[in-house]
Length: 420
Image (cartoon, rainbow, N blue to C red; front, side, top):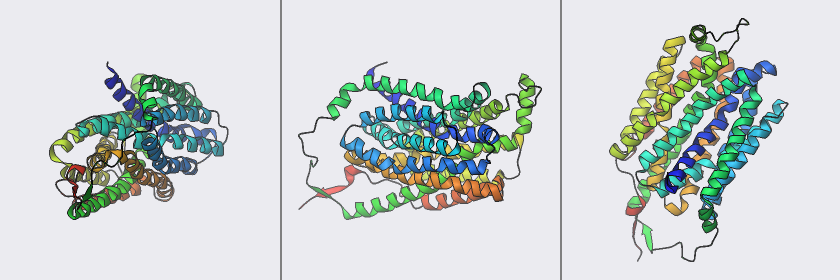
């Protein structure tokens, strides 16, 4: 493996770990803490909300620092910082303390998307496939959060689910530091060249098209975030309620259930969640190839139609049928992720790309944070069936917005005309 391949691998591992850390608590709350601490699931979600607020708000300063200092340097801060914060969270004793720990995790988790994606879209060509491959790693992190956390709950307790990944991530950060040390040092040396390389101004038609597409990107980012957060955070709880029959059947086949009746049910539910997330994440590879070939408009509309269909089918379903339909709406939820990142990568100027991604993820993760109280409220009063209907409506809104996208995106290369 050469240095370039190692760099891309470490960036992908970073995306995997970023999503794993942000969703460890989702499984811990659903399968362990509400029993151990005697706190309701809906109440526990309130302690996760500040972490997702930090996940959004700190994306913009992270992107600004990366553009001003060093993108690779910020990645080292991400790895080591989130590892230390996770270990500290594993030692908390009260809901308030775990909320503080999750807030610290959110601060460091905010670094990855504006910084890592800026590196991916500026360093390599064929960005549709690069973003898609990177996205698969991130979604596998989502999947493994349920699988690994469920396993560690059954075999070491929920605290180990925070501590062990934290130790691993600090190790990965040290490897990244060693591999990119020369680049980080070079980034710290001020450039002697001017940032302005040509005297050009954007054409009026380009500006109008850019405003239109940017509005659609940020609007669909917000609505898509409601769908993504609701499904990824709530799926362990949905499966805990709706797939008990399927989980017991799998457990009886493997002899996993102990005489107490609890046995390794958390592991089974976590494994079923992992299967859905892992298979659904492969949708990004298909989406990545389609983006490079067909463009974002038709691909985005297809993904939105999938979500409308499967969310509408889900209310009232249980066990195997519910599992299959959940796989369908997760294919749509994961498939939509690289599309807006692809459009930003195509339209954004390289010198400001991390900051623009920062703005995109401030929008995305701020909505993620606000979605948790929505999920808690809907679950508390009406249950998950109402949530599925709300998400079907959100997908319909996305479909209508995406229909206004142009067939060809505005790009910086075609953006300017000579200044007079």
